[in-house]
Length: 285
Length: 257
Image (cartoon, rainbow over all chains, first blue to last red; front, side, top):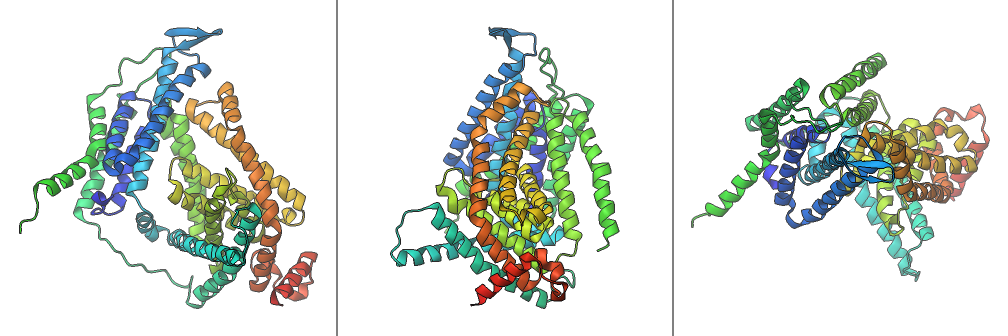
């Protein structure tokens, strides 16, 4: 979204990777709640009403995972009731809810990823390191609209001859093949002209649109630092949490949970700042 | 680019990156280590493959064909959207791999998954999808010699690969949930995804059967005209023509008329 366009494209990507690397794989419910809270608020700020559908889906996922897990897993000591001979345990129910939260967090944060990081950003980040891959991706993104135009042209030509407008598999397939036949020759000509202009002889050069500023570095250090702090605490066992055979009493480490919460709500700072500026500092004439 | 360096890097990925991922998973995410290790290994495999590809000298036609076929299969997902759950992607990947080799097939599969997710939304499934479609193409390229001769084998291959990867995906999600295979859950997943599996296999077969002949004609023409793909080694015509060459020649002549 435009709130993060002032940053270098590596910044939002690093940030989202840091958040997701913890929230998807951890079993600690406190960390998961932090991630869910931060992600939900961020998504509501970015997408507004469009986010509600996804949030409803996430709630459904959590409910289904929580409800069905005890049917398959019978570990845990607190039995709620029996289904047939198998016990339906509280621990399995909570473990299922936690797995559901992991998946919901994944959906929410990836939705934020899709809204924030665009194709251009991905090409800008990987274009320098992986020139061939970036070249192919940008070629694909260029071919798709051309192929679509070709397809529409052929379809309208068929309509012009008085063909029916009903869609059928056979007709679509024949048009599809015709698209390939047209474009294949043209594309091979492109490759010949690439070769004629010296493709593969020297290293490619590329122009950089943005420059890496100090604020970008600071943002990256901030997100990676908090992420590493959480990882260290997890490695030390202070954020361990287990469900079987009984729910673990510890796992709430103020430092770890606090730093992860700070990491999750960090983008809100920019959104709130921007909105306040626009709201309370109007231009004077 | 020196091939030894590429080999060393790929060895490093196998000997260092995979154990490192396993250790990190076990140390940091005790209960969920399996899901972390699975994702990590898949991403490392893809990264290794892309790195090797990046360092290799590949001719311009290869890049262009990869781009065109990926764009076509991404477009196919929207063009055939009016048919519920029938997608031509796998069929296109398989046919490309047969005529242009396994590496091209892998790259077409991987790029199809990556770029179509620009439109349909990236997610944690992206690397798995990239690997699955990439391997569809890779195996098709490996078996290309036989698949190009026999239509029945090709249809069987496309059906089998559809079912196989659907089962593999179910196994992945089962491991992701529990960290081990709970057989009842695996069965539940398979039966709930049975419709997807069947539609996947059926659409593979339908589209392979539809596209087999025209795509083969176009690809053969390209291969013969520019001396690429499966006819790369036979550009010297004095080596004698095989049966396929003759049909390709005929196709070229028909195209010129």
